[in-house]
Image 1 (cartoon, helix red, strand yellow):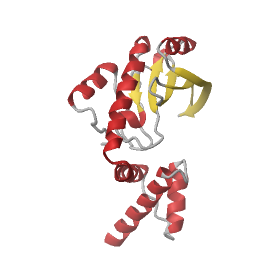
Image 2: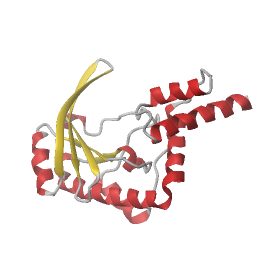
Image 3: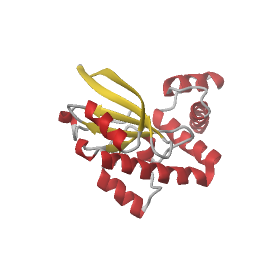
Image 4: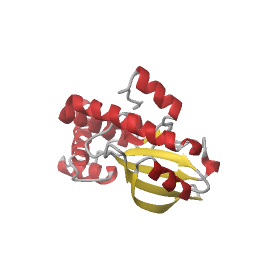
Length: 203
């Protein structure tokens, strides 16, 4: 049992390294490649890989990692205040506190007229570089969302996902960590920045 656990851990660590150094971009492929490296069929969970990825980022980036996290959260708050009318929620690695080199700021907003968001971002100094619609099918339901890519005033990459207003408060499961994708509202993010600005939300 101990040997199996150790092997699983090594595969998770290898998969995380492949993701961290950009050899692979998707968890599934990273896990498969790591398993092949160790000659096993053991595949760790996405959560196990994500936790190892977090450890590797800490080891390689040190204290600067948390400095970047705090700054990214501050930048996210400014963007969210611009978009206050659209119920903004900070999600992704900046919410989790699991950023690594190359991470962007992910914010979910809700609007039935998402084109208005682009105009507001411009007034706040956000440079929009790309806008595209994405369609996914979940549980037999077709969902559309507008993805706005840009750059904050401090040059952090930004992705805003605009969903229909009817989806406000809808529970979503995180495919990586397996828990509820809660994120942080403006008020909650302000509280985190005041009390524990580098807090992680990984469990």
